Image 1 (cartoon, helix red, strand yellow):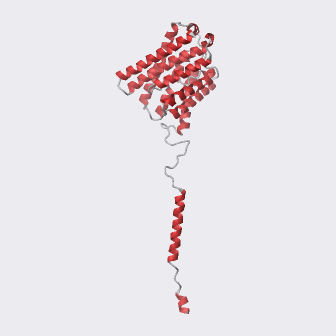
Image 2 (image 1 turned 180 degrees about the horizontal axis):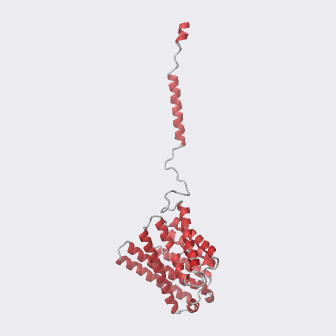
Image 3 (image 1 turned 135 degrees about the vertical axis):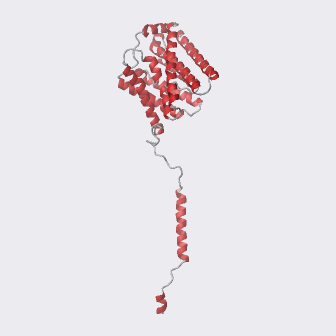
Length: 306
């Protein structure tokens, strides 16, 4: 339990540092692109540091008496806090690309956000490595001994791994598109529960990152898979899942197609059938009255015969 307490203290320390960075950036930077980049940097740093510590607990925790249920509970709380404190930051390249495809951000802002997310993830990796080097617990000691021989998180074929990451990204983005306009009291627990469930299902196969920046900082330096496999599984897989979710939810990809490719657009105005029937009956009655008021005149030939 001592190792768990140290990890929880580390989570609070990172959260406090990133929250201070967010508030400081609001005071010093004008609202706009620079403030958005600072929020992305802080959000990615917070998410990467927390997920690296959780991954360590998941892999080495059983040696210290920590089961997967404890790690999944911590993951739910970590992601819930991250979503609540993100201040509009995505901290995920696929979310930023989704916002670009929805015309919510331009190309320059999107590229800047992607760079900020990569820098934040790199800083989170460096901070966590420094924290592990202090060896505050036996778990960190074991982690340092294993760090030089870390293995890849891909425990299946690259094609199947890419499919798993794409499926996780698909369901995550589908839920995100559905609840992104909802109040925080609904959005935060739904997203946290979705991430926890997807992680529980997919972690044996690929580690369940479905976040290219987080995956690059966490597992790209480990031996066991080539750079091509990492890119295929952790970059192309989540990107494909995001595109499929956006296409299914919207019916199109607004940045590429203006026409709805999946769902037909219904007419905005509808004419009630009852009114049309009454109008037709009225016309028929008027025609009948006109025929009665204008009888056909008799022919002159019948008058002359009389």
